[in-house]
Length: 298
Image (cartoon, rainbow, N blue to C red):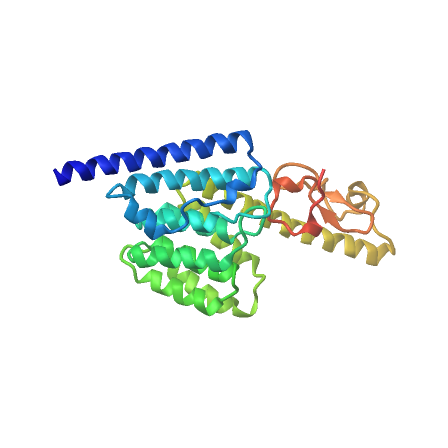
């Protein structure tokens, strides 16, 4: 009798929970910009876990869908705040501690600066450490933690130690040891674009999640544009030193033999040459991780 009562209570709880999620979705559909989007009606991961009555895996999937939808809406509208992202990820990974994609995906987008993410390095590191604690034999999580320590916190020694620890995990990728050495080598050079590119290329090559893959591709394109802009501005500086003025156009630089043709960014559009000799991309939305001085919004 008690088993039947427990099953009935679980069914009622699950039905109510799903109904609440449906109602919330309908409210947000009517008012998508409403502040309720950042409200967690149940904010305690432990309470949600206890209340699941054995259905924690199902609720983890539901919460994971909410995480993805929440981030997607915020990102679509170039939001500068992602208040509910970390709490939602905490609930999701408490319900299912082995949902590795939630740790990898969540920490990446928690770490990135707005509007591409929450800009919260500490929350990202806390989440990925939770992932390692629950999945100590997953080398991808060590890579993600070291990645954030290096790029987000500029903690080169911490990153080196993390990559070294990850390299000891069974079946770990060999380049974890290479990364440990690079972190120590770059300790005095935080702007080493070669290492940053190497990191993002590994994310792109190893990730099976399309969102992470696309994000890595945008970072790689932005890095390429950054390097090319630096090279082009070096050329305009040399032109100014030689002729006593800035070049008026790319054609003038072509005639001077400084470049062969009009330079184009990784998206195929021509770079913009400004009157002060600086260079920028034409469409900043295609390169969200470029420094502001290197972009020109249309």
